[in-house]
Image 1: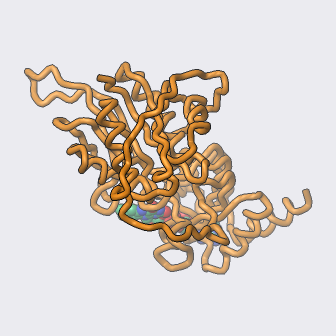
Image 2: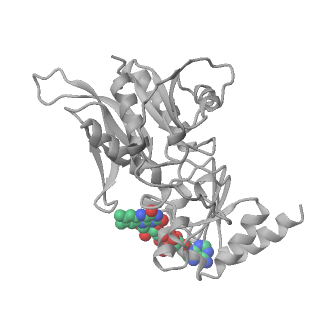
Image 3: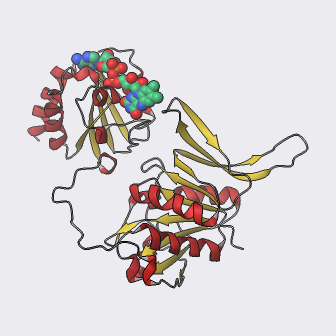
Length: 336
Ligand code: FAD
């Protein structure tokens, strides 16, 4: 009976997904509250050499399943492999990234092993749940996620089924610093696959030619709010972002207006970002926006209203017109 915290870490072409490492970081905090270990789980083909990196980012142990049938992500063989790992290891908690793969895999596994799943969490805590005065309570995973279109935050408990399972949004939790001196046990779990486990035929894998940038990966984000005045001004913001080696993002107001694509949206119903620098241009700082960027290392806000709430979370605030300041800033930076 291990009762440990298991983190399913996605990998593609041998590259470990950042969200998996973020979850290992978060799991180390939960494990301290629970008095248990953090175990990373890797599934794939020829992935053994990637296992050590999970230890370096905080896992105490790693279990992995290697098989040619797991070379590309396909729901059924992956669900079978993970269900086998869970049955053999008996974890208390299993965490996944809320990526397209995590959102597909986690419910399949939950159904196979007859447990519950809380999807798209933004906060996890270990706390004691007491049903009533006489109840001494039990330590449970408190899983918080936006509900009713983001209008409320719901905290969900899984009282009667094990393991407790959650998918967690990328970018919400913090990855630990890499420590190459860390050591931990690495264990292979053998799963017998049969041809009927593969219910699709992969004829060809076509890689995206021009991979779209992902705002959760950017080190610098120049973000536009309604205060930029027109969709064309995103071109001016992009120029500044290019000078800074960054990317552009947006508030929801501009996404709803059709000025920016949905994948640019930062916030509660958009993406959670943690860049080194977040430059908020003409963004008021509504709570739903701030929820997606408050983990940024440094926030610079430009707003013509000196009482805008964005200044409450900004490290540097500039009161003024973005249409005047941004071109000047870009020109000045180009000179360096
Ligand atoms: P506004 O609130 O209109 O602010 C514009 C700002 O620009 C103002 O502060 C103004 O002073 C300033 N400004 C105007 N002109 C200039 C200028 N020339 N120079 C400098 N400053 C100028 N919002 C998100 O962003 N992300 C979300 O994920 C999100 N999810 C939501 C979920 C729910 C359930 C709800 C109800 C709302 C959500 N919202 C979200 C919307 C959020 O509440 C705000 O409406 C939105 O963030 C406002 O966007 P904004 O700051 O760009 O626009």
